[in-house]
Length: 123
Image 1 (cartoon, helix red, strand yellow):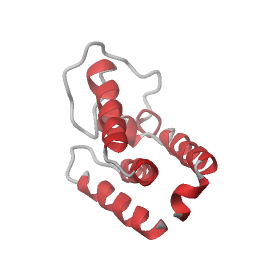
Image 2 (cartoon, helix red, strand yellow):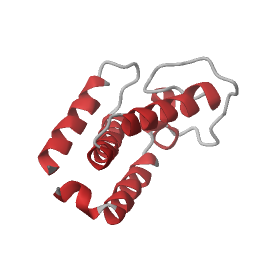
Image 3 (cartoon, one colour):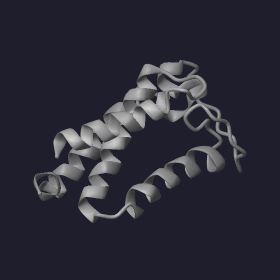
């Protein structure tokens, strides 16, 4: 099961390579989110949960908070100006997925998910 999740998550990361302002950190973060979405799928055996996660992330990041979504600028209700000017911290023009800050957050979410749902990956 581990390799299936890893391969599908890497493919999810590769799908975003053509996006504007793509970064290595962006690829890593998108792959991590792919792992989390694959885990959601394995738990519920339904695409609804990962689709809802993906939609919610993109909706709040772009239209609600005004950040770029994987390098794409969308219309937004508000515009948030990052405190830091360091692209590695803010994600720059790629959006939050390009931020090094998202790496530990994603890893934490994956670890917590696995701790709570140990059987998901085993079955």
